[in-house]
Length: 338
Image (cartoon, rainbow, N blue to C red):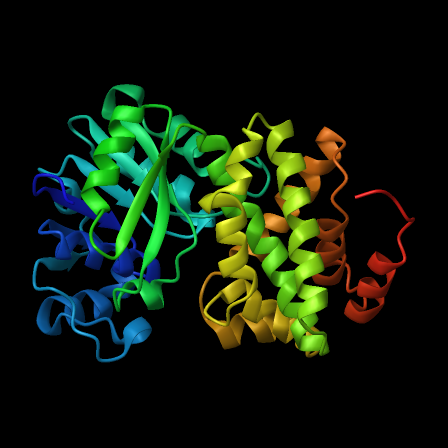
């Protein structure tokens, strides 16, 4: 099931940007991917060989995907812009985008994080930096999805969330096909909070694996982690039911249990004793949870929300707490009803 064929600009040539570009192209859409000038090697490879070997080896992408380092050219004549970049870069890109947009666009983002300092969700940043008359609506596309599986057409389900449900429906139809299913949700707050905070819990789950703990420990951490995510999300205005869906428990399961997850892998390396600098060098891509844990901890303190797992991850990452002792202290917290 697909919509009419459209021209789409994708900002971000990383693994998830390319994964979603492939879905769009296979649905018959014309896709132009933008990235910064320092990534010109990836741009040339995409245009000449239809490959992105940095992330996907010798996989060949559809010829309807091309790439550029010229943002103005990327968005010209395209009524939908998909932003798929690390959270830390969203505000700067949005500012740049605002200068170049000439007519109203649908703005979709598939980034997962909270901004350090402001603690803001991605859609809020986009609302602040892109003039209202230049955007038809803002949509968050999120859910349990590894790019490595999407590019080989593994079955995947995600959520299209927006305050404007008609636009959310447009985005749903744009991406939906036989292997990529999309649901609609009006709770963009809950969808974005679930997407951001699950990365923190995934670091914890990976750390348990690195320490040698088994499935029992992971199940407990994920379950209690979901409770933390829900408490903070509801305090910020989210619908509690969202956290029982794809962008809550679904995204948490896939991120906290799979070696495909950068956050899980980072946690595993923490458990094995590597430093944060060593981990970032080994993984070589953005690890959203390392930044989001700062914003989440500060938000929890501001809202007086109990988030012991988030606090523990923060202590291990930023206060050099011993990871095994921190796990033990979590287990020895005062007994309480579930």
